[in-house]
Image 1 (cartoon, rainbow, N blue to C red):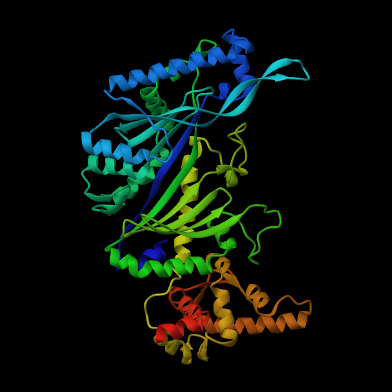
Image 2: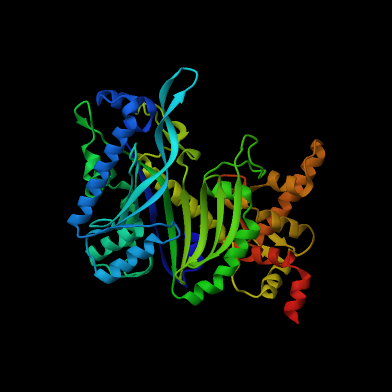
Amino acid sequence: MNQFIKQHQSQATGMLSGWDRIRFRGILRVLAAVPGLFTWLNEQHVLLKQFKGFALQLTERLKTSVEKVAAAAGRRIKYLASSALSQEALVQELLRREQIEQGIVCILSCVEPCRSFDIRRDPVKKHIDLVPALRKCLHWYVYVLHPVWGLCHVRIQSWLPFTVHICINGREWLCRELAAAGIGFRRRDNCLIDVADIPAAQRLLDAQPWARWSHLLPRLLAQACPELCRLRMHGAPLHYYWSADETEWASDVMFRSPAALNRLYPSLLRHAMTTFASPDVMRFLGRKVPASGTPHGRFQGEVVSDLRTRPEGVRIKHRLNANSIKMYDKQGSVLRIETTINDARDLRVHRASETDPTGPKTLRKLRKGVVDLPRRAAISQAANQRYLEALAAVETPSPLSAVLDRLSHPHCGSGGRVRGLHPLTGEDARVAESLLRGEFTLNGIRNRDLRVLLYGETQDERTRRRQSAHVGRLLRLFREHGLISKVQGTHRYQLSARGRRTLPAVVTARQANTQKLQQLAT
């Protein structure tokens, strides 16, 4: 990531990395599954034939509780008959009109799908059963101006098992903290375009994953619907288990002007669309891929990249199963790289077993619980970092003729005199294209990797040695011209800063469509 910032430091003021949107899910574990709910009903002395009436009573208690919250705040519950209506637009309009500073902003209600339960007759057993079911029910959206998080909302399901969602925004949270600390900033929407003290702002963002989630989330829920905190079992209150259903971790590179980003962004888009293949996307999102660039045979997922134009800018999105990483120009002068994790269990981390916390650490699935939010933040940051490092290979606006002139002349380096390079044709061009492959941009390239790409596999030892020696001379040639450098203590080579600036321009020119170039010339 530092390489990208250094490359564009004359145009960029800095970068901030942290949470964007986080959607938490709260469930009452006892009520979320049939066995636990059945036990709870037994304790309440409710027969299955009485389940419908009992469930409706609970829903009515929740409705009364939400109505009391609205009345205490001087608000009315607004029903939305269509999902096409923008809740965010309604809330923002209300904030502008009434200048609300803290507390309940508004409460919206709508009918949406949900996971609940039903009573069904079993024709074989000749009795009724409690079964899970997909249904539709009323949901309340309680929008709150939180003293810590700023504008956030609580989504409450009105039917059993009373699942709730809480959605907050890390940039909204940061703006509150910057204002409290007296640090100046400029903001558009949920994006910061300038900050007076970037290191201090980054320290505030770094602290967010370590918040006391198990303390803050229940307090916000109690503010939105106190009745949910009064459900009991065995004389003790039922507590919600909190997990992160969806997280967005954004790295914002702030440019000095929209013009500076507009000059660079088309090249970044073109590079991402033409260079980043499926194995690269897998590496960005933490999957190991062999040096051959072919996904492991056991991989059964899906990798998709697409380009879309949105109101906030043009974005490219790379998706691996349910998780993704995307890039877009936001608010004119901000380049945003954002990793979204919808399925934490698709990622692996080294941790101990939950049953033996002090035992040995092995590779296990990332948990969705808030206890693993710091680790999820680290994984997301690493993904953004790998993506930006790969973008550092995008060419600078130097004329191509000047680049080729420098490379075509013989060079005298520490290893002696070497011939000039001709990266537009022949073997030199094939080497240049190989060096820009995504797996080598991230992990470096070895002699044997390049040999296989140039000549293919061979079983003849003598031929293999001759090819390896020739590849060694080619690597030395590119190294003496300053396009690659050797990784200390290894047999791998990586693109140098000069190589990242030069080779993409050369390869792009080699692959250019002659018809389009002729049209541009005329």
